[in-house]
Image (tube, rainbow, N blue to C red; front, side, top):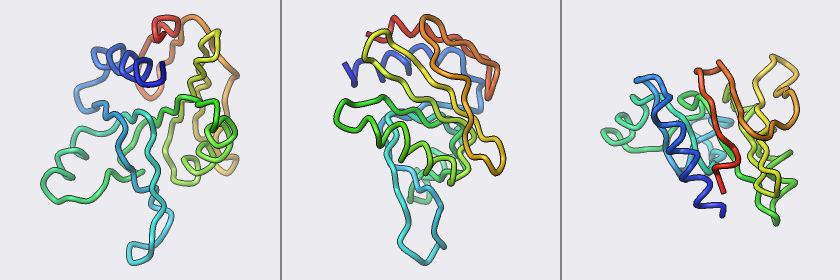
Length: 149
């Protein structure tokens, strides 16, 4: 379910993205929490929405997608990593300055928590959404959550 839902979310998002953004599934991202000459922190969100130029940069220069290039990091909650997905990764993505983090829980009913940066407070959210998720930030999108399964 996890892989299928991630793919389905990508399908739903793809046609709604502005041309400068694209979806990347299951790829390491440098959270840029350490100086360039020190060991860094890398996470692999289930899905990221990035500036199209980021993938082109990585293709040409190598390296990793940088947190500063990520518009949205999406995590699908796994039963064995529920706390990490809701607390640990959410906190790390906020510390990295990723402007939006979506946490999708497939444990029915399918829900999505949309987190956005709120300055020194880290991420804030409006609670879990079920049914259809709609937002205008960071881009207008409508996602049928029930269709993810």
